[in-house]
Image (cartoon, rainbow, N blue to C red; front, side, top):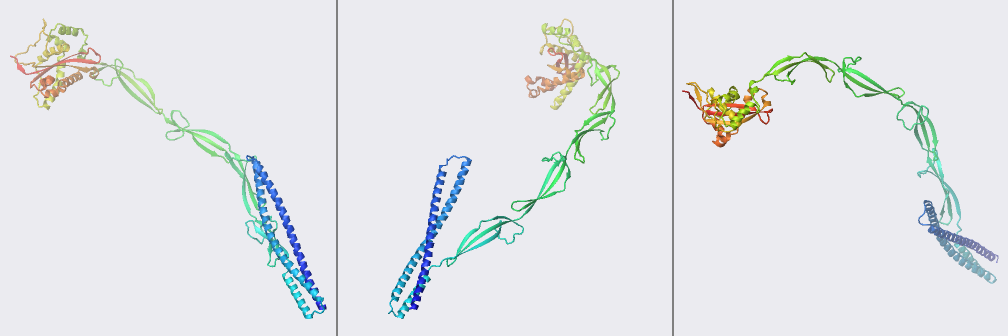
Length: 601
């Protein structure tokens, strides 16, 4: 019986132990339920706060100032943080709910076990009261009760236990783990970070990890130059300054908040304000570049642009020199003697042909200075000449001459021929023969060219006097028909000696030519050449084509003179000043005749 009682007591102890475990589990459950209710209340409060904040944000005016906008951004950031925290809380609530559900399930199991144990104990107690029960039965029931107690014990939940651990991690500012902090400076220490590790039996290890961050100390050298003037005033612009001194570098060390150091080496450089002085220099030299100290007898011929040179003194000051080189030429004088030939009107003469000397002046001295300063001293002697008058030129009369007016009236008004005696006074036969000489040469060149029989100036001297009558008449009456009347006095034919030659006047050729006086220049020889050329141009050159074509109407003069086959030719020229341009032109009437000669019997 005692053994039975002991067994009952053991069973009761097991029940008590189970009841204690149940109570603890129930307390844990109640604590979990209370914690869950607390969390749910916090969530509700947070939700109310979140709703209010969102309402305040919605009530903000849309167009806001920069400050309002910044405030809204701040609130939005805080709301974002609240949302993150609520999400975390909801995750914790879900986890707790799962754990509570597991505890509820296990408590239900315990309730069943405890109820079974209690029932079994009651059975044992009831059955123990029966004395007649056999020990075997009792032992059987005890064993059964012990087994049930053991089952309850085995099925009781393990009450988890927790162990706290504290860990410190040393890291550099790049996230690398370090073990030695020598040469490092501490920059931050994190709040302990809690982590919980759950073991298979439900025990937990709560670790609090603190991260201490260190920065590797770095030194940076820095050079500073302080530019100052001689008074110590700082300079920011060194233009126009000259360095005169530089100090030894002064060392200072600055420690930054992160532990780094800046070692500064400060050098003070002193400058002097540059002062410039302008200087002008003139170098006088001759043309060979030799310096001159005395300019007498020299002439300035060139002055260079100033050449700039700068001299820098020891203190940096400058002397700017502008050097001008003036070149001089040694003056040289040259004497010249000049003879100036002038006519009596003072007009300078270049050709003295046809002039004779009248007088000679004393030399007149003049000095000319050349561009290089040299001088030419000229002694000028003026020699005056007078024109030697050409008698033929001098004999040429003007159209208004009284004698010519009388002749003109005789021919035009009285229709009376000019006599030999009148022609002798108006026509210079020797000058006509001079013209004939030049004209003969031109005519014979033309005849030779075309193989015509040559005609020559006649040797009948009387013929020149007789044809002169026609030259005068043609001047005033241009026609092959002579005036009708004969003069009451005078002759028309020159008497010839027996046995002499007498030229006939088969062809008669008349024309005017105009000679420019400036081309003659008072020279009758030149006048004769010009008249002959003009006659050739009109009679021969202008009619060559028609004459060679045997067109007598247009080339009659050419055919009479070049192609007639006559042996002899005579011509006369009558000259006077042109009626319209007396100062510019000579007007020349001329007559050319060709024929054969006969012998006077």
